[in-house]
Image 1 (cartoon, rainbow over the protein chains, first blue to last red):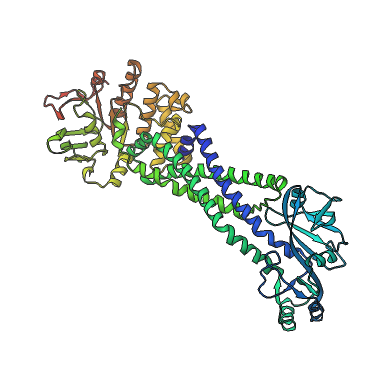
Image 2 (cartoon, rainbow over the protein chains, first blue to last red; image 1 turned 180 degrees about the vertical axis):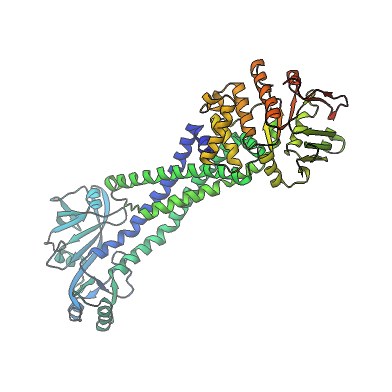
Length: 357
Length: 237
């Protein structure tokens, strides 16, 4: 088969390059927005990395970041006696706003009352995330003051973003900052090896009927739900704009290439080309622009996602293969739709015109 | 048709517009062309030559009259069937060549085969043979824009022959060519009618074409003049 579609497109290399770039920018816009959305949605996965399986909280708690909770310390002892429970870690949480070099920063502090692991800190020590470290301009060994208390940065962990920055404190500091005697914010319960999670959850409900039992996954999902509620509409609009822009670029390019060569399409009609044959040429033109632009856009998105991850950590981007494939396929579908206008143009070409000089 | 007539037009009329602005471009033309015959239709600009050719080629529907190609009355056919007839039975040669500029000579012929469903190696082999036959072996991969006028017209003729049509319709095939290339194209057309037994209708201003025509008809104001110049078929060969 003679590759007329690509020849027509490549006959104007500059225009073809600009069209591909236009589609690539549209795809880049879509994928960057989607990857930012994914990144924000995944922020709550942080709960799943903490050393526990269940969270005991006051009723009507969505997740530690979005809700306050006060649980009697004594409930920790009751929870520890439940069959299948291996560990119970009291957790203190509090949002703290503080001034740093003339800027007000917010941090979500957590303190896990544990003797082992990376969260077992000494009084006066603080473990902050990368974004907070960058915003506050501090590193390991530096001093950071919260509520008039001096803390020494002992670790900078990965994570953090423009809306959610975390710091870990010692249990004593956490308790003092929360300042409610006899209460902790949450109880983080770990299962014994081999314990049946559903059965333990049921027993915790029975033993502590005044508390709610959440899995870490539920908290993560709840967090993602909050993000979705706030951002999904915006993301939808931006993604929609991206596809409209991409589709318009493809339609305009294919339409122009078709109009410029209407006489040639007329010649093909005159020599007996069927509608299917002619529409196939237009469709291939659209698909070539769409596929080349989408491929370039996906590659550019991957590069941008890596750059953002390295240089602007507060913008968490998660570019998944699934999203990239979905956007690529949607770009091709947009190309098919965009070929409608030039196809209509071809329908109107009168083959008898080819006899006119 | 049993009398050897390949193309027959009866009472062919084309009126553009209506009412007092109506223009009768072709008025009651009767014409019969046999296989192996080359008919030249001459006439001044605006005499209706191109309109007549467009109707004979199934590109324009007549207002009245009937056209038969082989055994098929094409004036009664729906658009899709007309497209098939143009693809399978008619070869077109245009004044301005009408080659596809983004394609090379070989591809310009190949695409006519693609149109009729011949693809890949088979299409390339047949296109190559036609162009070699037209003396363009050394120009196969030249873009249409890089060919001389005569070469372009020979490519256009090869394209017209790609699907082995019975009828060849040529509109001013020598108009954009110098005398040397014009003669070349004339020889090719003559050869096609004689050697390949095709019926050919050529409309032109070019009096040189009279040398190769079996019959020369004059079209004036949309009517074929009764005084038709008839030449022996061997004349000019």
